[in-house]
Image 1 (cartoon, one colour):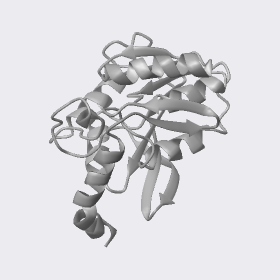
Image 2 (cartoon, helix red, strand yellow; image 1 turned 135 degrees about the vertical axis):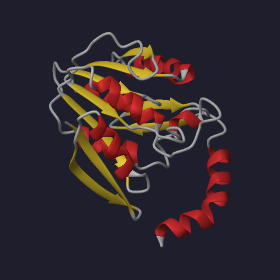
Image 3 (cartoon, helix red, strand yellow; image 1 turned 90 degrees about the vertical axis):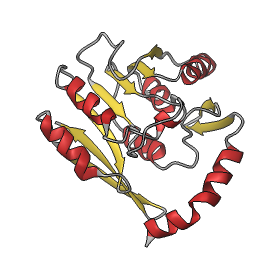
Image 4 (tube, helix red, strand yellow; image 1 turned 180 degrees about the horizontal axis):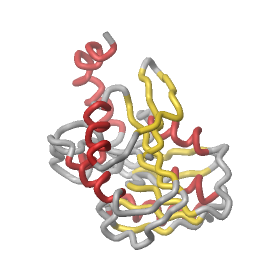
Amino acid sequence: MRKLIKKITHPFFKFIYEQRFSRPRKYVYENIEVIVQPNVFPPHFTLSTKILLNYIKPIDLKDKTVLELGCGSGIISLLASSKGATVTASDINKTALSALNDASEKNKLKVQAIYSDLFTNIKKLDFDYILINPPYYPKNAKNIKEKAWYCGENFEYFEKLFYSLSQRSDKTVLIILSEDCNINRINEIASKYKFILDCIHEKTVMAERNYIFSIN
C-alpha cells in the first residue's frame, strides 16, 4: 500500500522537491553545518543519511581511518572527523567536494576530499571503516545529480562496488539500503564476489524501513 501511495503522489513530491532544492540549503547535525548545493544529494528529505548518522554517532572512531564512499553533502564525513577519525571523503560530484571543503574549514574539522569514481583514485587499501549510502534505483543516470539516485539499469554500480571491495582488505564496510530497493538483486551481486550482507541495524521512519548492512 505504501509503495502504491508513493507512485500516486510521486509527481507532486517530485515538484516540491525540485522547487525546494533549486537553491543551496543548510543542513545541521550535532552542531555541524553543511550547505547542500542544488545538484548534490540532499539529506533533508531522505531518511538514509539521518539513520546512518545516528548509527555512527555512538561508535568510537578515535584514531580510526574512515572512508565515506560517495560523500554527497559530507555531513557523515564531518561527524566522523568530529569523533577523532582520520577521514577521507570521495565523490564524482566536484560541486559536492568543493562544498565539503568549505564546510570542513567552517566547522574546523579535517576531511580529505578526493574526486573518485568508487575506488578509482583511492590509494589506501585498508580503512578501518568504509561508509556507503549508495544509489540503488535501477535506472541509467542522465546527469551528475541523478548518479546519486540511480545505480544503472543492470545495477552496474553494485557490480563495480563489490568487485572493487574484493580487491581490498578493509576492516568494516557498512552500507545502508531501503526496503524500496531490490535488496535481493544486490545480495545476488554481493554473493557473486563472495560477500555476505549481514543486517546489523533496522529502522522504520515514516513507514519506510531502512537497513544497515555489514559487508562481510
